[in-house]
Image 1 (spheres, rainbow, N blue to C red):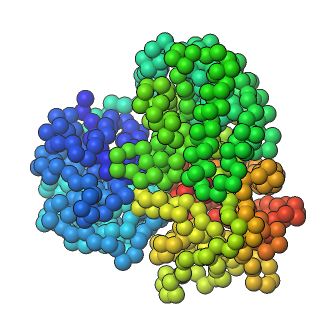
Image 2 (image 1 turned 180 degrees about the vertical axis):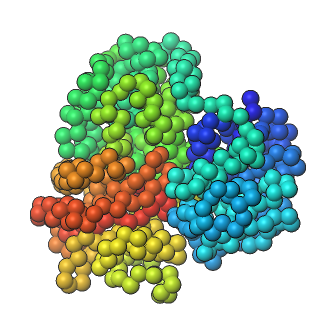
Image 3 (image 1 turned 60 degrees about the vertical axis):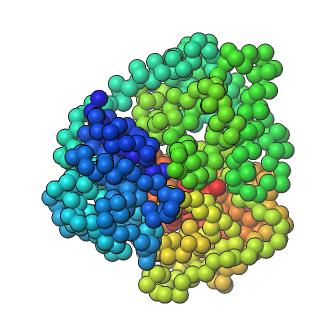
Length: 599
């Protein structure tokens, strides 16, 4: 069938490109980078080269069969793909003088092709350190940003195009228009895909994969595992699906009871609840590294499931493991050939990967994104209490409680002194903690910068982007909400800060305060997720809180929510009234460069 062929160079967004083309109503298939021109030419209406974490001039970087450019089929390169086109066809690529992560303004210089009907300037989403410095023969620049001259290029005669930015992410304002221009105007593709028509295929795939076996499903109570539960029951029958909800001890306040109530009211009868909190706390005792935490949690889920299955006398050969894995879980765990591991999701630890290789795991949602999963849940008739629920990570509060060894941490970061890189004249301080980020499709583990004395969200946004673009040791910026008259003191806890029941109880209470206040203010449906992070820094209690509400659609990109400062003051005052927290921060970092979760 005619389709858009996408060559995967390891971008966090490769699969998202296919998703966007599906939204337009066209079929898209993903291919490895070493696919030959001969293979793709038969059914490809057009070819897209994805982004990737490497530099095109590195010896080990993935390349392309150059004959693809001579097929007469339209080609669009994105980020790495854009640079690969330039270098392969005779242009040049070099490290940029300024890195770009997040929002940038594109000035449209030519509207004859892919930028037709795109306003100028328009917001685009960047994630790159390298840049095209010279164009190949026959190419012209059709769009530029302040820091990237050749942000959009075209060879209209050969129908070959390149974007340094990512049109596939929602935060590129006219991204869908640009992709539409490529798919239907340049490629003349057919409209041959819709999600409603995919439902029968999903059910059929479940039945084929199960081969008469039953499914032992790990249920979290979130939208993904709940929709997975409903799909499995529809495909196999309720009696063949055993739903196990594991209380890890790291759930939010009263959450386990709420989840059980929601699932039972939605008609899930074969649901079982197991309190395994003692096991999780024992396994995580003394662990501070975020990646190690995630891997231990993933393995512990499996061990708890195996023990439960053994106690029930279930034959492992007759049962499969079911998971509500969605695509962002896979790609962030380095799930494709050239992708970097941003963070290991609990449903992608090594033991799970081995079971997948053995054909013993069933994941009917693994190719979909959060908003698509919500749509499938709606088609299945699930209630809003489940479908509209904020995402909550499988490891729960365990990855929202930052841990540290005893002793002061050395900060190996320094802000550049130039005012052009720091457009906001406001006090700031690098914090002695680290968090996970994603920049240029690579994982970062760097410091946050705290600022205070400014309330204008747009100024803060620009400052956050400027700092994280110019300083590789900083991947987040946070706003201090309770700055005192005296200079704040940011020290790390002199004692080891670990995953304890006391710290969990503290975060449960503060998380409940923050989310309740936000819900009372009518913000729940406006925010995609509201994470609350506990960090072992301060001056008296050596515990501080970072509020992380974000706006997103499918979690691949996000921007921080602009909550009214009067509401933030109510949340801050309520948190400080617990007499257990020194500072309350507000994360003003987009994704990229920060991930949505801190660990």
